[in-house]
Image 1 (cartoon, one colour):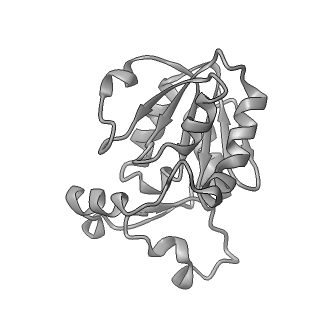
Image 2: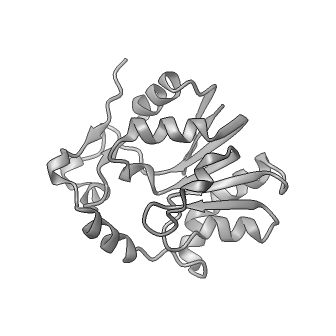
Image 3: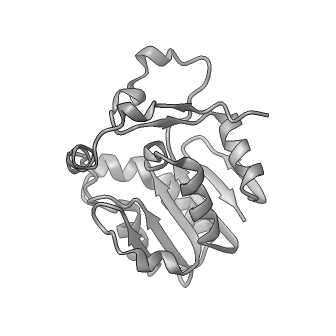
Length: 184
């Protein structure tokens, strides 16, 4: 089984400065009702899967960690990491009950390395919650809006997700309507 991912050729990747400038334009405001609705299914799933004494990591939190903000109001303990906006790598030296990776995995320039890291950061019975758009053959890729973001460098389909599960030793994969869960 191949992974069937679609990757942007590295010579087309943005420079780190251009990438950061683009991320600053993202409007992930903790008070934006539309964005809160967009991420609410992930918030609800984490609340149903874990108690508030669980520890989490918002990996690639960006400028506005909306999911983290909402979960902290329910007493969840969550660390933040983002290579541009919260680059403290000390948080990557511990393990977590769950990791949030919301609208991040499509930015992975080295996806194998990133998923290996995420897998090592999960405690036994831990879960990785990923939110991204999954491509399928029915999508007209040349006109797909999601690929038009110049910071999106990899696109996953269901086979890609199964490849990650199998090759990185996750115990299960759940592909939900709005997000994906990898479990240890």
